[in-house]
Length: 111
Length: 314
Ligand code: FES
Ligand SMILES: [Fe+2]
Image (cartoon, rainbow over all chains, first blue to last red; front, top):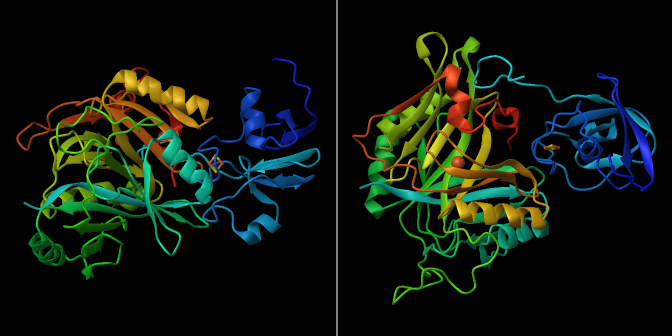
């Protein structure tokens, strides 16, 4: 990994135990992808598809851009639900992955 | 003669400014008008009708409706009767429902997707005109796509519950709208379940496609490019603009198309699609991809599952 001097917060993915450093102003998903880590499903990375849906269980996240209300309603957002591609860390935080792996072509899991 | 070709896609975006930057500077479209309600209309340089994409700012991403152009105004009345006889409600929306567009026949596919047919749209001409036209215009920019080529819709497929909107849409489109099947994916015992289908009205491998997934939605719309070198150049432009690429340049086994999948700034998937693939004809035998080889059909080189193909859409 290259040296990266940006200020960061620690992000923990509860289900997998994965912990990674996410830069301030970088999305939770982008930080994970940058480090080659896994845990949160990656989709459009633009707030539209909802596969990166998470729930922040401890700590704070800040919103970086618009999200599709088809996947996170305003109510849900107030309860801590977020799209990992449109929220960045505002403190060290822990999150649960909500998006789930679906069947491909109706024939079992694709991974 | 019925349906000629794909006409336009009306798309929801979360941020109009970001969407315009993408569709104009990355895809290479031209903004042709902005309606009083803020909807923005765009076209590609090689299209002669006024627009092929409508962008509407909304709280959700995804498709509002998909439209096809028919040859004659009377086709709308003929098709309305056929659609109603099939048991699907259809209505005529008066001229001017969309600007620069004649009356539209509106109905929902069995999957629930909003489909529109129209016979008239304002003619504005291509960017190279009709008199001694150059092969491409000097004001070509971005990926410089020729035209909107096709759309792929995700349709609910749940074999355990006996739900297969892919098969229902395919049956309706062939029997009523007179599309013909070019390729399909079949799964399950004996290949009894049609899990995806590609259908044509033109001579290209598909003008519409349906893929089975957990819920209905918009998978992608594709824009035409000439060649593999144009695909490479389009990917360069996406790199330059930090466009999120879903699947880097490769080839589909199905349709043989040379492709890039990528996302617009609201997460709607786009495709740049190059190559003739094959000459689609009504009497051409249908190609069938089986459960064990279906990922080779989807992405020919690696032939491995790409989960985003069936899970990520708007
Ligand atoms: S990856 Fe699509 S909404 Fe985050
Ligand atoms: Fe496509």
